[in-house]
Image (cartoon, rainbow, N blue to C red; front, side, top):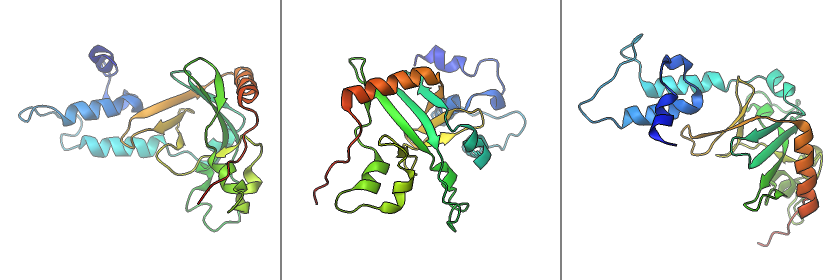
Length: 212
């Protein structure tokens, strides 16, 4: 992104109006000012940008179970139009003593397809849920209940997990430092065409045999 594009994200705005995806750019700029240059936030000169950024993140991604239920069946695409996602369900093991404390609702179920450089759509190379539930040597059968299709994956807690924001979009924090990729709602009909093409190109996803 060019410098003027970065700065246009902040121009004429108060800090509370700056989008979360732009806050990381602002934080980086402020952290790398010359040593003898300082800055303040008008409403609170003692406000630390790092703390502000953390608080904004916590508030922005504080999605409820009802918020997750609302996106079941919804489809999303990243800004570069190279990856599409459909949320197909949420974990339903409500009897687990860890369901609320570990926020299992974050581990929603989805299908994802990716566009190659030649413009064709394909399955994921590796689907964690399928490989975990159906591994030929060490299957973890408790996960079978969530394999709604051969294409279904689970949003596990990792550096590339999806996060549902208050604006209804999905985000991935690529670097775990606020370097977000945004997935915005897309046409369900377009998603289904992409899914059809990907499966036509690759076939239904099949679990690969692991060698130990």
